[in-house]
Amino acid sequence: MTYNNIWRFIMDPPLPPARNMAIDEAIAIAFAKNKTHLAEATCPARVVPPTLRLYQWESPALTLGSFQKIDPTLRQFLEANPITPIRRITGGQALLHDRDLTYSIIASTHDPLFLGGIKKTFYSIAQGLLAGLQTLGISAKIHIPMRDNPSRRSPFCVVSLSWYEIAVSGGEKLIGSAQKRWIDHFLQHGSLPLEPSPLEKSLYEKKSITLSDLLNRLPSLSAIEEALKVGFETAWSIRLEKGDLTSKENQLVDYLLAERYTNAAWTEERVPQNQSRILGLF
Image 1 (tube, rainbow, N blue to C red):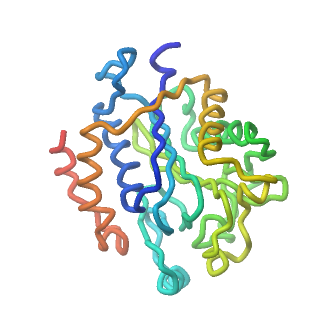
Image 2: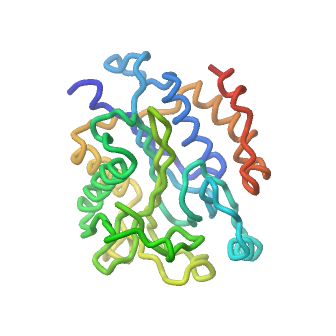
C-alpha cells in the first residue's frame, strides 16, 4: 500500500460547537499549506495526508450555511431554545446537531477518488458512508434526483434531499452533507443522527429518520465509528491510521475560535477574519 492510500483518522470526544467548526477549518488550512503530517515513519512530514474526522457535540448547536441568512423562522427557533448558532464555512442550509455523529473529510481535488468536480466528490463520499451503514446492517441508498427542485428550498437542511445524500427506502434523509471547495482541496462534512432530538419538534415540518429508528438496538458509539472507518477503507481501498492534530493545527484552531467561530459578527453577518494573520501562522 502506497502513502497515497494512507489517511489520518481522528476521533474526537464531544466538543463545544465553535471548536468543532474551528478544527474542521484548521485541518483544511493546514492541509492546503502542507503543514499537516502523521508521525509514522511511513508518512514523511513533507507529505500532507487527507483526513477523516468523526466527532460529536458537547451541547446542541444549529450550524448555518456559509451564506445563509438568519430568517424569522430561524430567529424564532434560536430565541425559543437554549441552542448555540454557529456559521459553517460550507454551504447548504441550517442543520441541528444534537445526538448525532458528524464526519468531516479534507482531501485534494486532484485525488483520483474525487476527480470530476463537486458532484463526483459528493458521490464518492456517499459510497464510503453507504458502505459504513451496510456494515451496521442498514439498507440505504444514494439519492439521485430526477432534477433539481429549487421551489422546495427550506431554511433547514433535513427537510429535503440533495444530490448524492444518503436516504432510506421510505425516502427520508439519513445523512446530509455540505462542502467547501478551493482550487486544490475541499472540506466536506455531514451528520448522521443517532437518536431523535426533542428539539426537532419545533424545527422541522416532518420527522427526520435516525439510526435508532432503523435498528432494533443502537450500537455503541465506538461500533458506529468503526463501521464508518471500515466502510471508507473498503469503498476507497485506503487505510485509516489514527492520529491527532499537529501543533500548527492547534494554533490555527485557537486563532479561528477567537476571530471567527466565537465572533458574533461572523455568525450574524459572515464578517470574515483577517486572512493575512492566518498566512502569518505559517
